[in-house]
Length: 193
Image (tube, rainbow, N blue to C red; front, side, top):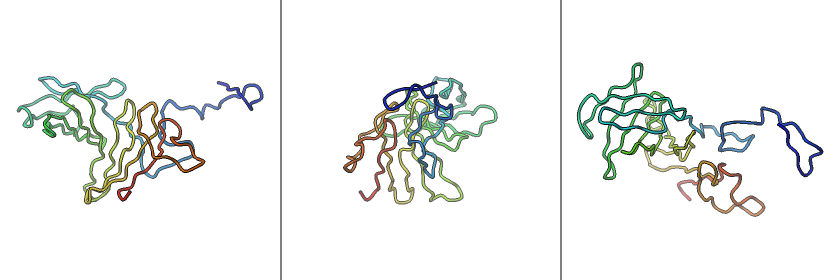
């Protein structure tokens, strides 16, 4: 692959290390001390009378067979070798399917099977440790907030509108781009703001 354009003499080859099939929420050279993107295990749920099939972004699936009950009393058997727990919860006047998965994440799906939330599980050894709330995406989930489970306060992360959505960020200081590159982290909102 080569590139040419204003200020470039002829065509210049692009090294393969510059290319990625995985979108990033931070510009090249930036780092965050936590995982800003999560390779989520599940992207949707197929809900039937006999169980729930959880599907990942590649199309692979795992079936949780219904073993008894109805509504919030429903019980499910995980696939062989899994210790994941799936349950039905009733919140905000609607039924939801919540799985505490093997990947240390908790997924919540609507009754129609749409992924609604993705949250890191609390650490049993440090129950007051921060919770990482991810914004579900098509192929990746971006870090949306870092929440203190004790006070309920959180730091919100906002992204420029792009391929995976985003929100309008506050106006940048003079001399800076008002939104930054599409889909990139552009603002942190602290609880005291």
